[in-house]
Structure formats: C-alpha cells, structure tokens
Length: 336
Image (cartoon, rainbow, N blue to C red; front, side):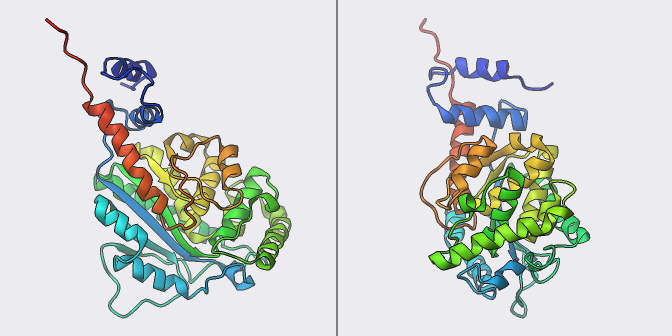
C-alpha cells in the first residue's frame, strides 16, 4: 500500500519534536519516505558515481585544462588523493568511476579494478561547433550506461546514489543544454569553469550562441539536445536519473554539469524530479538561475567551485541525519 502524506505527518506528530520544528530535515525525511515508500527510511549504504568523459568542444579552447589532464585526475582520485576520495573514505561512502569516453590511454595493468568501470563509447565526443556531439546510437549507449549503473546499485542494495562528473569542456556543454532546454540566454548561464579569463569566457559564450543556432533545426525532442551539444558523461547521468524512479532510488545531484543532466531528464520525464536532491549551489554563473527555473532548493551553499561529486559527499550526511531522526525519535512516554 502506498505511503500517504497523512501517514508521514501523523508519524512526525507523535515524536518529541514539534511538527515542522526540524525544518528542512523533516522535509527531507518526508521526501525520502515517499521515494522509498516506507516510514523506516534509511540511506546506508550510499554510492557516488563519477562519470568521466572528454568533450570535443574543448578543441575550441573553452577550458583552462588540457584534454590529457582527465586521465591524471581519474588516477589521482582512484589512488585516494582527491577531495572526493577523502570524503568518501571518511564517511564510508562507496565510490566508483565510470569512463564513458575519456580521450586518454590508461596505464598497463590499470584495468580491470572494482572501483573503475571502463565503458568508453569513443575517445571523447565530437566538436559540437562543427557537428553533433554524438551519433544517435552513441547517445542511446550513454543513456543505457547510466541506467545500468542504477540497476546494478539496486541489485547490490545501495539506498542512495550521488552523481558527479569529471570532464574537460563539460561546463560549456552543460551551459548549452541548460540554455536550450530552459530557454536562457548564454550570457546569463555560461560561467568561468576552471578559472577562465575574460577573453576566454566571452569566446565560450559566443560558442554556445553559435552552437544553439547551428543545431536548432536538428531538434525533434528535448533529448536531442543531449545528442547535439551534450557529453557522454552528461547523457549517462541523465540515464541514471531516468532509471532511478523505477527502483525508488533517491539521487543526489552535484554541480552545474550534473544539474544539466537533471535538466535533460526532467524535460524528457518530469516525474524524475521527485527523486532528485540537489547538493549545493555552485558559484558558476547561472547555477542559481537554473535551480530556480527547476523549482528546486540546494541543500548547501559552501562556494564549492569544483565538481567531482564533492557537494554530493557533503550533502549525503544531511539525508542520513533526516532518515535517522525520522526512524529513531520516539514519542514521550506518558507520566503515570
């Protein structure tokens, strides 16, 4: 039988805290109850999925990072030296990296390993200033890759999934997706990414303008924007969000690039919104506007200017706290 809002409210009204006095923690617990369809909610075990990929648009100089740096970042993460690695280790959160299409070679003997899923669709997307970023079959493969990670997590008993990414050129692609699907001006959305100069920022804005004009005639559905200006890692995260509702799986979304995947998923299936929590407000230009357009409120505002799922790792404990409070606060025994 489906859990109703009245049942959840009644459960909270019997606790030793006043109804509504725990603010957003009560709101988070209520949403988790709807998603998991239980009053005995739990978030553990949790898993953060980091989808990695290279964008062909990086050939246009829209990033301060060279394409080859992606492999170094992934290796550093998997060796435990990155911020997300430290947070996951200390919070006992399972961490996995998925190579959706990194333009690099991995060291001999690096593959296979349990925390690294090697599923490259190709070595980077195409330059979407010249042609669509993906072929139709590549888009479908990327979406399915994300869906499969959610199915696998559900089989393995994971209760909450966090989505993060690593990708050179990712903020350009994500800006284009958000501008297209939310009908926003690139000037309001395109940000500096990894510390771009004013000159490079202006070039990035101009590139997004040109790309939106170039591909407009090829768009037949919202998901087509993923194919034309997206990335393999963005499409994979979109697939993961679309799959989540079939497994009653809460999803925690990271920064601007991960948010773009949610924009695409919501445009394709608006009911996906009910399963998503947004970890933090990124300082990227436009992230606040995008979240506002989606009608969602981030859990944290820590001025985090880096992706890779760090916001997710910091937000998951809030969900855990909300679940613990709902499950373990008990009514006051009446005085005899």
